[in-house]
Image (cartoon, rainbow, N blue to C red; front, side, top):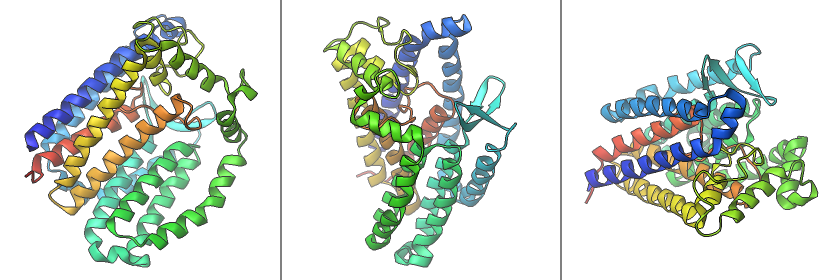
Length: 364
């Protein structure tokens, strides 16, 4: 059973990655030729990310995942340092007003992805160490909240609200399942609502995103442009799509067609059947992830696998929800499919850890 689960999870992930490779080329080839005179520019870069991610995945599969517990605190400290350094002018790369990346020649590294993984490992280790003390406010709830708060504050300074919210939601669910008193969580949510309101409505572009989500036609050529073009792409595809490579929205109408809105291009070119196929694959991934969580051999592996599956699920749900205009625009990629370096490699690392845990799980 354990072997079958690993094979199924690996196969599902490979299918999603292959869909991503095809759709990244399809959605970016014309833009890549226009900008870089190489229609394979983004495809080749993403393929290199895939090779790096595959190497890391197989390395993680061969190690003892329990060794991650020894690195829980050092990884958290390293992530703090990296998030501080990326904010330093000259070290961090600024794109469209956001300073989120380190640039190394042709590769970019986003430390928030590393920090996300570090926090999940730290929280899983913390829960495993504390046991029944997790119900205590000062010993069980406050320490992980302080660590989470420090990481989230630095990510918000980049600024990156989407990643921050996703991380907070996942860690909160992990602590709730671990046995933290609901009153503590409810109090934290109430206390954070004013800060969330300020973060959203005091920043003009975030406020406009909310307004565009409610009615994108108020500013169809401005803040509502992406949502409208995404809906046009999905609507144009019909049941079977206009055909692979035949998208019109990728012709400089839909921004970020190969990253944040690749699901819309899938809908246009492959139709409702294509989008439903992708959703079904993610449902299968989640189902297999839940089997690994259920049969995890110890507390640490249980909560680590829970955090990883929750993060991938949340990123996929938010990306698809944004593409379908069910959620306000957020810059979260579609796991395993969207173009991206750090985010894609993070997905591959998650896969490697889940496959490692599945190998040692106790299956009936």
